[in-house]
Image (cartoon, rainbow, N blue to C red; front, side, top):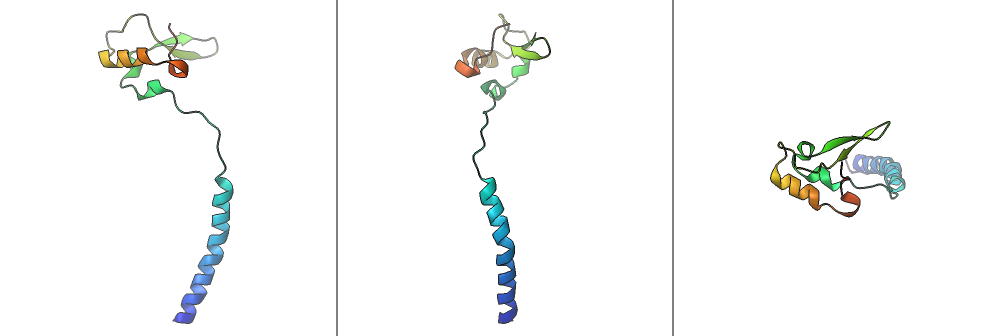
Length: 89
């Protein structure tokens, strides 16, 4: 049995080496952006409007709180700043 176990360990080691090498090579840093903060606000869709940008549309923050928008969500969206600030409609 010891001989078979040694043979099995050798085979597993041979199989793991290429897999380990692939993982190490794939672990290079990936450049990307974090999702916008407004996605964390509960019911954000009920608070924002659509703005036509020509070939696409984008979210925008209306001047007045929509009736369907929860008050706390509205306050959270209005407090966003910097890169996370939602443009006004």
